[in-house]
Structure formats: structure tokens, C-alpha cells
Length: 64
Image 1 (tube, rainbow, N blue to C red):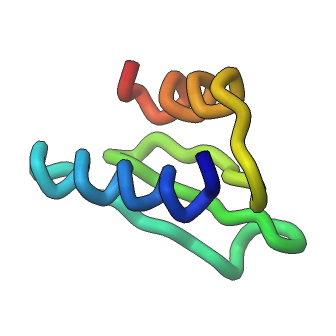
Image 2: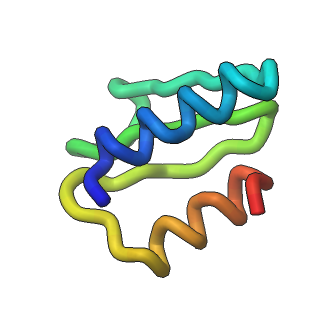
């Protein structure tokens, strides 16, 4: 899964559940993004995301 695919999945999930999703492209270092979903924040790297990393991000955002 790429970063763009993960962001699209988050947008779809947030829209369906009425959650607030904010993506900061300028707050991370280098090519990293900061993502806030309902007050929970995480950092998202660029490029290909491994399944373990995706699980970690979802756990940090309180999705799973």
C-alpha cells in the first residue's frame, strides 16, 4: 500500500463515520506527513507502507 492509498482509505473511513481528518503536509520533517484523526496524531512516511506499519498507524489513530 502506498501513502496515497492509505490517505484515501482514511478519508473514506472518516467521511463514512463523520470523523475529523486533518493532513498536514508541511509539519513533518522531509517528506513525512502529520495526520490527525479525531484528536489522535501520527506521522506518516512516504513511499511503500508495509502491512505492519499500516497496523501501527491504525492503532495510533484508534481505528483498530
